[in-house]
Length: 122
Image (cartoon, rainbow, N blue to C red; front, side):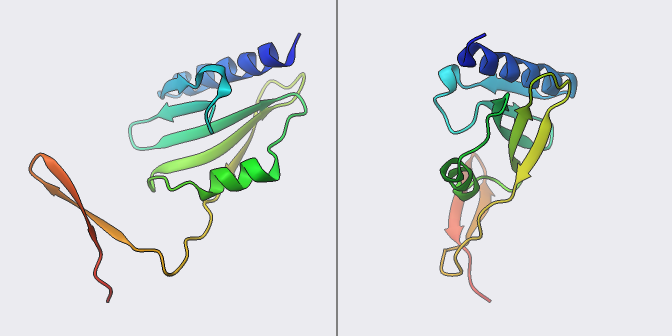
């Protein structure tokens, strides 16, 4: 089996598992995005990079994923499906630390509009 087919099969396995847990999933076509699978749950979002066989994240991929600005209810995960393994090995990546000088934004729901404003410092 070629590597692309093996990776697609691992992605389909991940989606089937997530669907069984109640998530609505979408798959990046041709693995062209940062994440292979995005799973939407009732209270959370799981952004998942799927690897099969002996595949692992490169240090650059790992830092790219960690550095993304995502909502707080969103997790960054790597699911590895080693050969002849029934269950994936799941690693949850922690976000990179934000610089103290980065602005903090507050969101305010204003009728039909969500407004972002800079948070006031205490």
